[in-house]
Length: 111
Length: 114
Image (tube, rainbow over all chains, first blue to last red; front, side):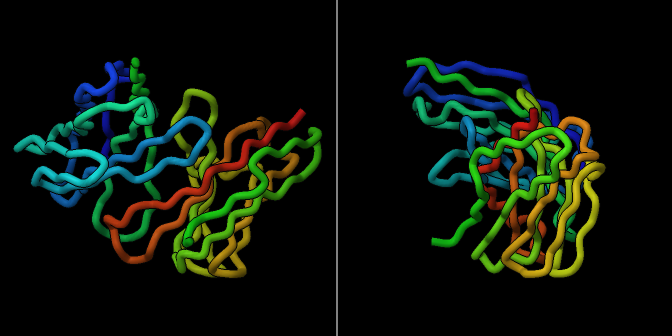
């Protein structure tokens, strides 16, 4: 799976939008972009995924650049419960090979 | 409710002892995975299994062993050969044959070896 690059940490004020960036310049045409987040002392949980078009669900939105070399996870109104490590992962749509997790972005939310 | 259960949440062992971490799922998933996480680091893959009675080594399999005798269960044994066993261990599962289906994780076992 191709590599992703994320900032080590970000900070946001409560109830403001948060834009978490991810660069994936070596993405291939069949790679899906997945986001997971990990709350303190818990296992990661799935957030959202997409291929080419922007995606929305109840947790977040995913904005994918036209050339697919970068993407942004958008939390529309950060809450204290959104403080977590966010992982951006590329996943090829074939086979069942495991996900490769980088270090992710640690998001702090300030009240 | 369907999910993945890891037990115990905290585990303490003396150096030189083998220890087995439990992972059970009732999601009817074929694929199961074990990851290790050290403080401030991402997850590293230890072993994975795509079907009963079959498993493959991940990136850091040395000092670990697994079995997959039942679809629901994928226990991980941390042997005395593992040089730095103290870590947070995470088990996950996934439906088969669907490249984009998400992983489901348990809440982990924190192992401390002294």
